[in-house]
Amino acid sequence: MQVHAWREAAGGVMTKGQPPVKKSAKNRSVGDGTPGPGRPKGSPNKTTVALKEAILLAAEQTGQDGKGKGGLTGYLVNLAKTEPKAFSSLLGRVLPLQVTGEGDGPLTIVVRKLTDGA
Image (tube, rainbow, N blue to C red; front, side, top):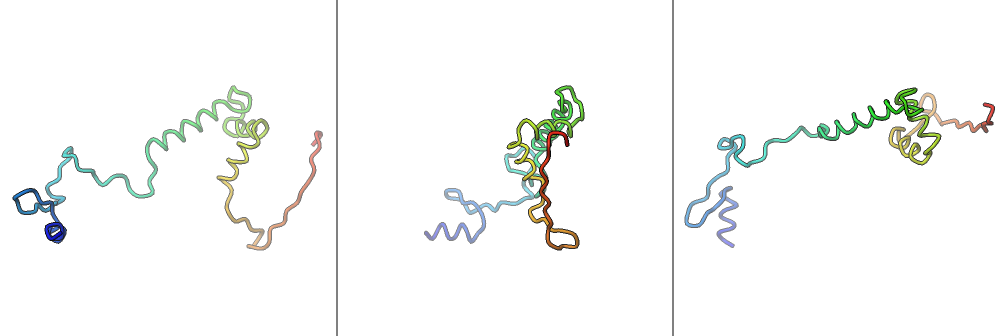
């Protein structure tokens, strides 16, 4: 127990029969096995960014008709028609969590029945 407390108080690593060696950022060099600072907090992973770009590009090239008609919007229109659950899931991710009416007043909801001719 005493050795462990002494090592923590010294702020270093103790090897058998030697005094503790303090770790210092000055002794680090690229490729020495110690991790670097990493990417800044909140910045997206490069793989995530590349994947999002590829998904958007694929949707844009597919379009509404499978040949690119309407681009990304066309793809989403087709998705809304053919896969409403998946489209609703997307909407849930992009809509704000709180919705208010004009001037932060109450929200007015109007429900209309659409016919095939509309």
